[in-house]
Image (cartoon, rainbow, N blue to C red):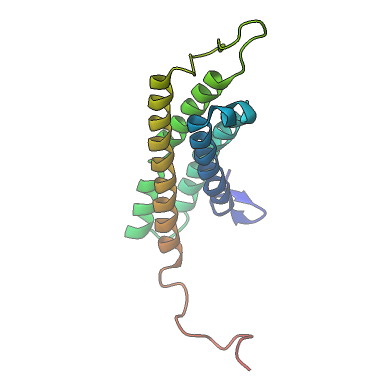
Length: 171
C-alpha cells in the first residue's frame, strides 16, 4: 500500500496504530487485573489486539515506501529505526490478550469454579499475567509515543514559520 486518495498511506495508517495500540494496551491491563473485565470483553480483547498487531506492519511498510520518496536526513532515519521496534510490542500485546481472554472465559455449566483455560483464580497466575501485561502495555504505549514524536519532528522540522505569515488570522 503506497497511496490512499493521493496521500501517502503511512500518513493515514499511522493514526490507526496510534489509536489501536494504546486502546489494546488499556483493555489488556484492565482485563488482566480485573477478571470480570476479561469476561465482559470476551473475544473483543484478542480481536482488538490482533487488529493493532496487523496495523503495525502495514503502517511500517507504508512508511518504508514513504522513506524512499522523501529527502533522507537523521530525523527520518531515527523515526524509521524506532518504527521497526514496535512489532515485538504488538505481538506481546496480542499473545497476552489471548492468554487473558482464554483464562478469563466463564466456567462450563455444572463445574463451578473450574475455568476452561488456566486456573484464573490462582493468585500467582493472576499476578504474573498482570505484571507481564502491565509491562508490555507500558512498553507498547511508550514506544508508540517515541515513534510518533520522532515522526512529527521528522515531518515538521523547518517546515513552518514560527511567526504568522499573514494568512486569515491577519486583517
